[in-house]
Length: 323
Ligand SMILES: Nc1ncnc2c1ncn2[C@@H]1O[C@H](COP(=O)(O)OP(=O)(O)O)[C@@H](O)[C@H]1O
Ligand SMILES: [Mg+2]
Image (cartoon, rainbow, N blue to C red; front, side, top):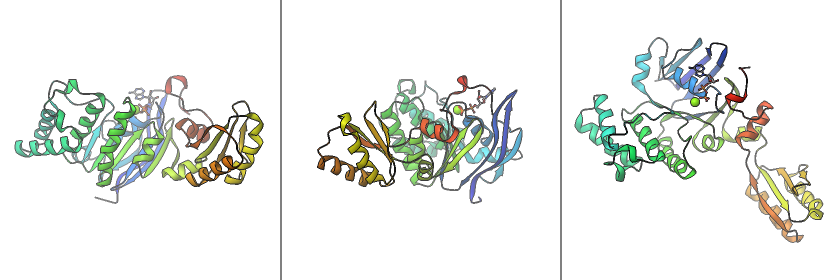
């Protein structure tokens, strides 16, 4: 297998008038995690479907696990796993039965399929639920089983299409924990998401996609720097202390802070995170300034999109056509 588990050039996909992908280049080095980050309708699933041979591009080429998706789809399929947005496991079977069945479909042999099922149930914190039918699982458990099912055949490259969309924060955190193990083990993963936090937590590289085009890319740190990075925000209890607060933030950040008089809020970018926050807290205390709120903020996906595109992140329904 080459250094690049995934390598795509100039992928274009049209649906009638709609250009779902307007020319995407993507490389994922073996053993790394790349996240494709973008709002609804950005083209994430379209790209995943092409890379997993479920759809063919109108233009462009791609190799996955060393094989061309157009000319050697069977070879590609043999080496990849895909956890799609829609669940794939059978609700009427137990968690364990599902995994054993998939192992047998992959010709693992019954004994080995059972062993693999038990390993995966353990790894995905599903051992206690192994003998229960899946229709009784929570959304988070079902999603973990989906991913476990994808791993039965030990794929070289794993595609996860929005693995945590629709999960509540607790289930999302549990899923991130199990994905951490995969990441640590060096599984090559292409993960799509709408959440910067998720991309940040799991991925080495982030590719930001909007309207079928890549609008930014880099590791989380670079991306956040590009959109302004962390901000210190102070909400003063009294409007007549705003000038003092502004002076403190100016000293701590060596920039000109942004003041919003109506909300008594002062913000300034920082690259020192907690250290700058401590400086500001100390100065506020020394000058006897009461605050309603004090903290470090990271850019939200909306702010990333606002900064990168000049438009708020919108979903497809509110946006006409492709650009
Ligand atoms: N089979 C299809 N037929 C027509 N339009 C499609 C089809 N699949 C996707 N699209 C359109 O292509 C764009 C990208 O969709 P998709 O790849 O599903 O985005 P994402 O997964 O990022 O939400 C959207 O505008 C979507 O409506
Ligand atoms: Mg999608």
